[in-house]
Length: 492
Image (cartoon, rainbow, N blue to C red; front, side, top):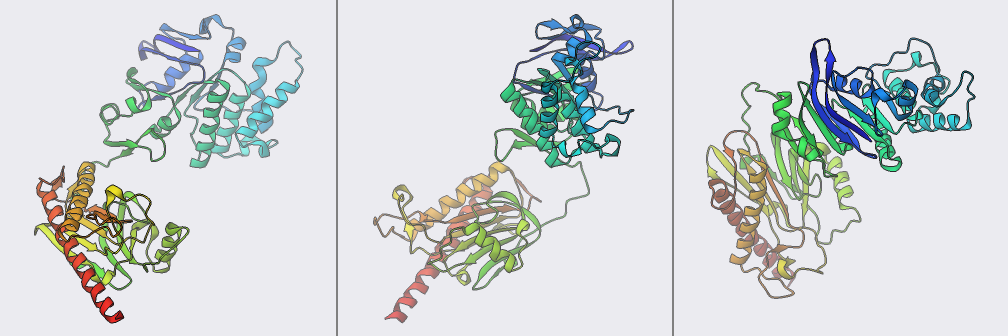
């Protein structure tokens, strides 16, 4: 639908855009990215015909821009500039209705039902219908922006050019606007080209991205090909970390701060873990990075509080996550800063140890009960019980994501070895158990001090994790058996 070939141009004798080429098909959304001064808005002006090109061509529906009259071109291409001129006072309806001008013919054109429907539909999509009779000079910047987008949609052109359409909008209206445009592209075959400052928004909503660097194409392709740490670092001269969105397969970046003051040393010692009959609690001095299978705040994040809560063996809940949130709130734990798991084992029997070097210890905490032990190789179809073996590993060091995951593998292998050494059997099969039905594991790191790229079993860090988890799990299992034997004696 839109084809650009070797486009070069700008202002005066110095071209701002140089040899830019790309195509955008029907139903496709292309995002244009680049730092300030890279030529994004200039390129959009050249696409819209507002700025003549020095060389190259822009073709829309098989015809170059120069072959169209202004009115014919407006029926093909709708444009939302970065800055809107609103010299004359108009109501919202009148402003949006200006989008129908390309469809009028003759000196005294009649306003048609189609015109009325197009304007009403555009206002509804942009959520400005209730402002129909409001004068736009009395509206906020974000409200005006939505009105002008409605004007572009009312134009009903098959190509839509947008220059930073989310300017002045809060996140809810950013979502509404981009959801609407994305839907128009998907369902009605609209061809969309939009300039973005926000790389993450562009990645979320666009099929492809064009990255400009000083007027030239630095990269073009799908978001996962363009939103690359090395490319973004090179073009923007900014430190970023790229990762995938938690719900859809689109890359997102996180801005990393520049070099600041020396890092504040954070340390976690075994004495920092407090044990009671209700729960085990670690209150870290400052947040530490963790990944876990906790009931509350599972996955990766930064937390100050870590809780292992005791529940009865017969604990049942239709929504354990909601019940845990209520319990945490009732006990004064900040929900956003707390990772919490639960266990049917007695929390006062928690085993805590320090391993590795004294200046960078690995702190391990294990609670264990093996009454519902399971052989994982033949464990399907069992009833779920409250967790009984919960393991914490807190590393006083800086771990990569790879090391965090390797640490989980190493800890799991060490736990399984402890089960074998203690000859814990699956009561249903008589085979050696590998864990219990709902075990939980947490690996955390202070992210200061010694850097650990790996945590496999043969590394120094992996060795400390393996030894610590193995020894603490063995001791915790033995504590459980002693308590169980005493209870059975008392019962007799």
